[in-house]
Length: 419
Image (tube, rainbow, N blue to C red; front, side, top):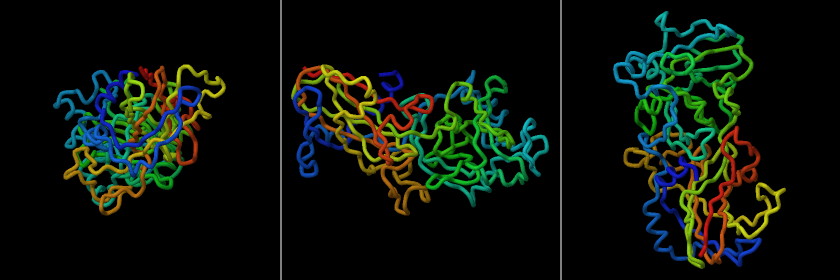
């Protein structure tokens, strides 16, 4: 496993609810029959003990993984420098301007020079009427494991955009944050104006975010204000936001475009393993647990397959579409949400939850879930453990977007030796 995944496993090595799978004789079909109804089975004591240690669904803000850019990384600046450059709530200001090279016509740009830039107090006045909060897993396009799962709160970007009174020639919006006043370090992303002004069905708005799990954003998390794009990978959710540019440019101009990435990709649905032994005794049951990122295509199931290395697999079936996959259990909503929320309660008016804090759908899109299985009856030999998702459209991982440049998709492989 990669170092990032090993770290993730170390921090999340908690077993989840049980689901029994039976393994038949070694051969082309490594998995055979499913045991009798799991609902009627008593819970295995080892699994029960692990369930009691189940990780929280939400990540505490301080526990998010950090992939920030910059030399030095902006959140590492001394406090007086943060204050000087607008990285505190008292000094933050946002400029909203027309692109000088591909201008959009706007009546009232927000600029520091004219004294019209939006300050934090002004953002909070907008929040009194327009604040929204929603759950989202934050994931890097090129890293398999998530950076953290949180409830993000902010003001829809469109509420600020409309205050500049745009008139015409507005096709895209691009934006960037503070990066040490060094032009070569500037990191920016962009969106179509369509996405800023109107939300696709079922998606929250793009927001100017100032809170995570009910707490003010820390500099480490991009505070005082960052962009958050619900369906986007992390590179779309720019930290330490300072500037929004309204442009007549017809194409994306994200920094990530220069890195040979698909800058319009949305979150994919995929599964990965959190806890799986690499060496077990023949016939001894062993638990496997993992998580799935629920992308824009939703999630219908998670599946596992224990492939004997003695079996030759047809080269033309590189995604194992014809393998004897067996369903694992997708775990239900947790009893406690975690993340540092007061009383472990979902914040009122959080998108995707009812008035009692219960999810309106599960698995929840743009979030993570956990899955579990217990494998038993495995004969001696060397195996490769695989897991995959099947999305709500019936597409099995890594389809329909198998390419790394549009996000993590590869089917994981973990070696297991049964002695």
